Amino acid sequence: MSTVSVSESYAELKSAAEEKYNALQDTPVIMVGTASCGKAAGADKVKEAFEEEIRAKGLDARVVEVGCMGHCYAEPLAVVSKPGFPGLCYANLDEGFVKRLVDDFLINDDPCYEYAMVALEPNEVFPTFSDFPRGVYEHKIVLEHCGFIDPGDIDQYIVEGGYEALSRALEMTPEEVMEEINESGLRGRGGAGFPAAEKWEVAREAPGDVKYIIANGDEGDPGAFMDRGILESNPHLVLEGLIISAYAIGAQEAYFYIRAEYPQAVERTREAIRQAKEKGLVGPSILGSDYDLDVKIFQGSGAFICGESSALVKSMEGHMGMPEQRPPRLSISGYRGKPTVVNNVKTLGYVPHILRKGAEWFRGIGNPDSPGTVVFALVGKVNNTGLVEVPMGTTLRQLIYDVGEGIPGDKQFKAVQIGGPSGGCLPESALDIPIDFDSLREAGAMMGSGGLVVLDEDDCMVSVAHFFLDFTQKESCGKCTFCRLGTKHMLDILERITRGEEEDLKVLDHLQELAEDVRAGSLCNLGRTAPNPILTTLRYFRDEYEAHITERCCPARMCPDLITFYIEPPKCSKLCSVCVGSCPTEAIYTREDGLKAIDQEKCVKCNNCYLTCPPEYLAVVKLSPPELLEEKEGKSS
Image (cartoon, rainbow, N blue to C red; front, side, top):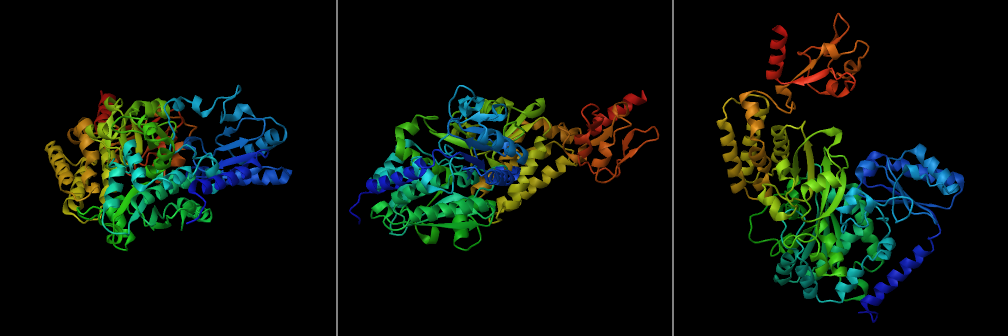
């Protein structure tokens, strides 16, 4: 063991990192958000445009790739920082505006305030992110540096206090580290909400010298991208949490389990591990201590079931990803038959903060039984989509209307699907429920890993339940009968309802009973929670099921078999042919009087004509069979 202490080794690393960044203080820097959300919106072209303009003008400025700031609705985003000015964030960038920013801001000191979204630092001219309505509710811990540091530069993470918690942990005993986490009340953020320290303690006390810990980044929920966003934006935070956790349980080998569909998350995590090895933060004698740890990456093949910890471990061993009967639990016999801890990426992201700031600090955020914050991927029918982090106890109403700024197009809120495909659909009456593990469970939903899909008046809840059940049914591993056959039977019933083929309301009682049986008899949480969308929509939206059965009507006009597209002649313009060009089957034709009409035999109900009809006309309408009958009877009379 080295004669230099752990704290001295860390101090040397931090001093060198600070010296590196102090030398760059007088250089303008452009940080371009290049997480997956930014790239999908064109961030790569924006980054290249900045580099080309700076090179062409001969400027001394740096262009840096950063991750996701959480404001995905405003991508591509870039922050321009220049000495003498606050760092300014510009949204919805394109190559043309990049040229103007370089000319006006970098060269002529005109920051184009009128086009800036926010400033990063408090100033007298422009608001900051904290001045946004969502800033009142957000409390960023795991997402604190996401989008504001270079995920590929370990020195910048160290300058911001990174790996300080690791140096403190290595000067504590493993038992003291676990006690700090236990005092904090940290619960797993993968969905179950199990106390993290309890899982660690069981693994540490389990017999045997070989132990493993795995960071679970296998995120497969539709509409969820929290783990991916964190690994793309700040992989060193999760790596530091993984190393601390490994030290606490006595593991010498740790893994990141990341699905292969997340290539950028894999690449940036691999680079973080490489840099940490160079700095002596991973490998033998970490920071001069007597603790050794090897960290590797395992790429999953994209099976949703492998998010379940025992199925994840089986896939790592080369077997088909199928859940195992418990006991024994993984913390007793897991990977290769050895004690294994599987923690979600977000759970590990809290660990360095707790070690740096203390358990009491973490306890002071959120609820007594659910302390800390929760990270959500806020998507669907909401104005400001993206990654958000709010304290536990924040209500769904605050999250959707204050953080997400409400429903677009003045539409009415209908429901929120929370907890992924196995979560529950909660109505407007549940909007004031506090977000925590226990309150959501009582309402029939669950926290899940953090996916939250907002639905509006145009969404059919029967169709929504069908969509999520279809996903879980296809992702079922098929090991147990209740999940394999039960989800298929439920899906068949939903399909018949959405087609208007069910005529007896007793089928709803059968559906309810079947859902409860699947929940009670399935082996793992995929099967046990798969019926949640059905159970919650039956509980809160039973009238929509009944309308599909008794009236053969879809109140939301969403189920294709229960709607008809119709062009109202008085509203149609003879000069407009937008709907004609949008129809893939040429079902729209011109009548003798020059107005448009729809050939119902050719119509595939793709919705294109309805979406493209100009707002000044709104001639295309969607009618259910009973409404269409009333329309015809009214004209006849």
